[in-house]
Image (cartoon, rainbow, N blue to C red; front, side, top):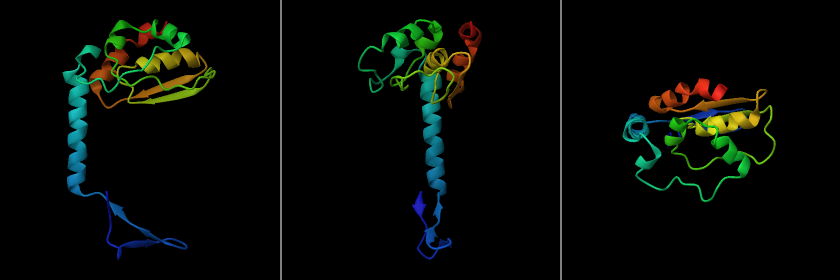
Length: 144
């Protein structure tokens, strides 16, 4: 993103606002990164052990209630966990809504779904079809 030349300004009620625009090369670079990330998480990795870095690792064991929830998750989802740890508040989530951006195969979504209970809602969003396919293939298992 670049700042437009100072002669290109929008007039707001009381101030001038510079226009921002994205060059075509920036869009192409973003698309290339998106493609590389999708390729890595969708095709290169098939299980957690395939990770080529240890950048995404959790420092310690999760609290017992989280471990109990993990124990209820389908093995195929656990095998494709490439995340950097679970980020949920430490208070009661019953009935709340949770959004997991970059949910991958859904491990954290399925943990959160157990914590929000039947009156809550969890939405997982990911850009990798292969990861979402894994999450979707276990919906019935996790609905029990």
